[in-house]
Amino acid sequence: MKIEGFELRRVGLPLVSPFRTSFSTQTERDILLVKVVTDEAEGWGECVTLGDPLYSPEYTDGAADIMKRYFISAISGVRDAIGVGQALHPFKGHPMAKAALETAVLDAELRASGRSFGRELGSVKDRVPCGVSVGIMDSIPELLDAVGGYIDEGYVRIKLKIEPGWDIEPVRAVRERFGDDVQLQVDANTAYTLADARHLAKLDDFDLLLIEQPLEEEDIVGHADLAKMMKTPICLDESITSAQTAAAAIRLGATSVINIKPGRVGGYLEARRIHDLAVAAGVPVWCGGMLESGIGRAANIALASLPGFTLPGDVSSSSRFYETDITEPWVMEDGHLTVPTGPGLGVAPIPELLEAFTTSVEWVAV
Image (cartoon, rainbow, N blue to C red; front, side):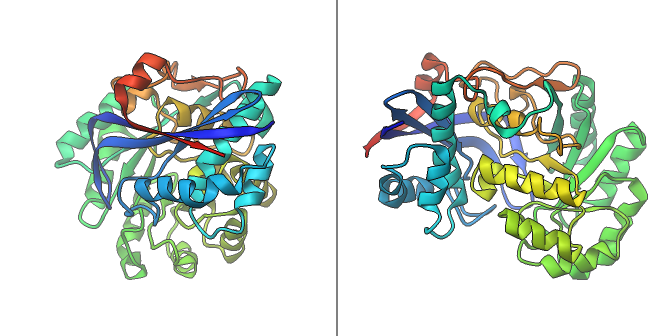
């Protein structure tokens, strides 16, 4: 397969409601889509960077720049997705930009051969359970209304974003209103320090599936210490950047659950390596989300169908975030989404919708 060039397309998708975490509030997603054109097929990838370097050091303008300035020329001679990772390995950092390019090439490669993303990664399921991430609200009644709506829609797991001042009481209110049968977990997005351990231990009363990334991403030892002070399982997200860091965190006792976000670890091939490592270590994994469009969502659903993904992930329906998606919408049935089986990602943007939401397009030949 010979790569002819890449189209870098910016798409602006408004959210159905503001999504607030401990580090930012989003009202629109400025998405960088990557389309690779080869002599055999075209392929799509989605860069999951945010507009500002608040969740990670990467940001969308920077991702577009590094692709144009260094990455695309570096992979001009590669023939497959494995070659993308090898060619980009010498460049430090920028995993989300690398992941978008690798995904696009892998999609093209699989479309050309008629193989699906799920089959390539090792899918063992035809559908995956859906969890939903609930942002920080202005009041507990507003939170309870939102959670109630998601439960009524059929979501099988609820994740609450937390931060200092919005943690114990919101969790208590959700448990009291909806009972112990609801699968419930919390996500701190690095908002706490080890000095908050006694306070965080109060969450043990609520039988949570896990607490996700309570401390700074670099503080692996702090997470290992915190794990000894809490009954609630510690799950690492931002700290897991590769199979190597996952192995270290498991060995140190810093995590007993792992959230795998393909963009954060450099792509779906590395995500599969982390999955395989975790399965060997007996550590459950689940698939995190970054408010992806239908393109990125398709790839995440395929990844979540691997055998080690035993916890519901953030693979919600399109309507959770977008009134209109750029692909055919992902619609949840009985709390699950169907794993795509068509060639490659199994989906593609609808041309009319893609054009309607496009804010810029740039072609980069190789």
